Each structure stands twice: as C-alpha cells, then as structure tokens.
Length: 313
Ligand code: MEV
Image (cartoon, rainbow, N blue to C red; front, side, top):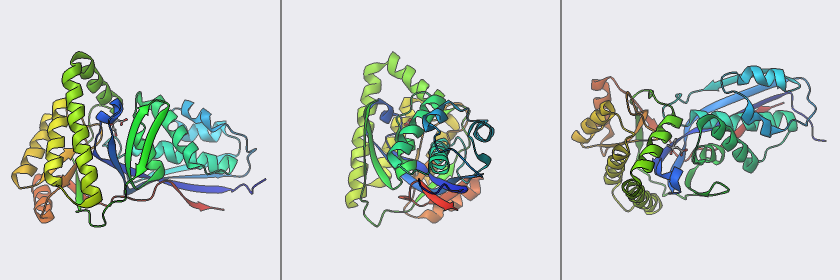
C-alpha cells in the first residue's frame, strides 16, 4: 500500500469566462481560463483507513464542510481553507472549492490523484449546491489553462486546451460587487426566459456561439478585434437579462473612454453583477477610470495551472 501522508495541501485556481457563459448551459461552447488566484485546502491528521468513498462528499453541506470533514472522515483532525478568489463574483470560488475539496480528501484519505475523477466528483458537488451547472467551471479549475468547453449531453462533456498565441493582450477585471442573486438563481432567470421565449433566446445563444468562435480564432491566431467581441458579447448578455442597470452604467462609461467590458460568469440583475472582464488599448485609462469611480481593478494572468498538490508529508 502507498505511504499515507499526514498533511496534505492542495490548491485550485479561480477562473474567468472569456465567452459563452449561460449559453454553455444549453450546449453551446464556452472559452474559460484559469487565473492567478487560488483556493487552498490543507488537511492534517494522524491516521486513516483509506477506504472513504469520495462520492459521499457531494452530500456534505458547503457551510459546515470543515466540521463535517473532521467529524465524518476517520483520521482528519484539522482542515484549513484559504482563498484569494472573491466569493460569488464570477471568478469560480465555489468550483475551486469543490475541486480542492475532492482533490485534498482523495489525496489525504486514499492517497490518490486522478484528475478525471476529481473533475467528475467536483461536478457532482457543484450540481448538488448550484442546480444545473454546465460543468465548465469545475473543469477549468481542475485542468487549468485556456479551455474550449462544451456540454453535449449530461453524460458527455468535451473540452480541449487551447494553444493560445503567446501575445494575448492584457486583460483586467473590474469588480462591480457581489450580486444579490446566486449563480443558481441567475441560471434559473435565463431558464425562465428560455421557457417563455424559446426562439428568441435560442437566437441569442446562437449569436453568443458565433462570438465564442471568433474569440477562439483571436486566441489562436491574433486575428480579429477583441474589443468588438467583448462589446458584442456584453450586449447579448444584457439581452439575456443578466446585467443590472448599475453594471450597465459602468460598462457604458468604460466604452465612453474607449474600452470594452463584459460580465464574466453568471452576472447579477438587481444590484451588482460580479466581475467585468475589461480591455483597453491603453490600460492606464482604465486605471484612471477605476480610481475616479472608486472601483477595484486588477490585471489578471490567464492560462494558469489547474489543481495541484502544494505540500504533503
Ligand atoms: C457561471 O460561472 C457560468 C454559467 O454559465 C453557469 C454554468 O456554466 O454552469 C452562468
């Protein structure tokens, strides 16, 4: 039998969606990227019997997970969760948590590291806690990099790393704040729209798919106008009803200074809409704008590594 570690530290990255959110729930493609923010779970303990069924983790409640791990899994005495991914803002904090949870418990209890399995079980965890996810978030948080992702069927999801041209222009995120709605609620809002206005909503998804393909081409070849793609994508997300008025106002002001911005992730309708993915030929202008408007802006590194073991002994 393999040596069982006494301490395991695992991390998973946050993510952004460059194009395709919401449409991806309906079988359209999305482009996602792992980013340079991570969530880490450290598990300590003395012994374990190596036969815990990881599938049971999706039944654990998210809020009490740390307690549940120490109480229900033989040998775990301490669990620490640390993260610099903002919660509920579209940067994949919950998917990173699900991935790091499954990966760290699997490593600690069973001494295994199987990324396919980590991804599959993290998806079950996401489903249990968020309703009807596409599975894109947990996949990019597991495998990292830039991913082309499509859910063909519940039982068949395809994804491929994208070999991105080295010189991708710098991209930024501006935080509009934590939405009042959860991701589950935002997915439901789009779901209701789809039910009530099927043909029109399908058309929006098709146009999003078209933009996602242009985005892919841009990443692969550098050909295309990223500013235009981001703007067009934002208009379609607005049409889907996932952009609040206050967020749309920020987007308009960014466009007025020559930039472009889109909601990335589930968005938000009543208050804030989470993060905006932002581009400008002259990033200084974005920083001046954010400063003047009291908004937080960060440069993000894309294509980062997926789930990884930080430390074991
Ligand atoms: C959330 O990060 C992205 C959505 O497309 C939902 C999903 O893909 O599960 C809104």
